[in-house]
Length: 249
Image (tube, rainbow, N blue to C red; front, side, top):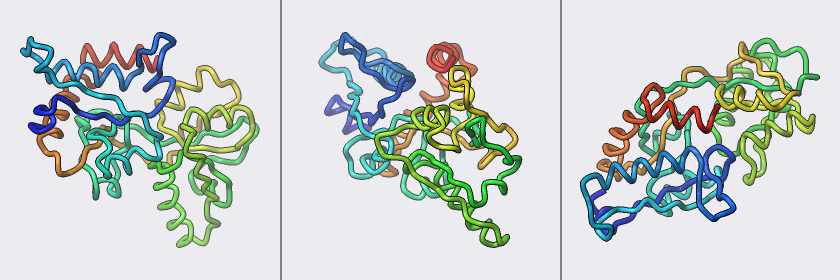
């Protein structure tokens, strides 16, 4: 972090999404992650009056599938997305999460799909999920359990790298793909506007996941700063409630 502040720049990797990062017609960026990063920039520059002394958070667009690979390769300093903290990801990255927000990964189907009442009912079925996501990771873990139980494996289809979870949900709504897995808040957000999807609250691929931003393990001072910031903007705080309500409600 001291070296980043010396060069007056911290690079944040962001992915295009109608809730997280959008370029408006006037050329300005907006979205939940953009607002959060702007607030982090203000916190970094608190008490600094001269513009040339301030540290700028620069947005670097990438695809979701490339978020963590680009972070590992040094193309950015923060992977700014609500990433699920998994043991596999923790081997390579550190996460600023505040450990205050947990989510479940729910099965979502087209309303014509029947017979899914528990995760074992996914055996032998085709499930489309975000590429390089925790959903795919957890479905692969389920498949290992299914093999031990003598069940057919789930046919896991990782979507094109240009697509996001909301794109896959729209495809489920249109009947193009039958089943997907997404975080509970995303399912309920899009369930308000997609009439043909069915959210299976009782069918959880994973429960109690923590979300956060990722940094390289070689950046402990940046992680410490982000951890302090996350506690100020988590849901339940005034600013956190304003931003999450604005973009997710």
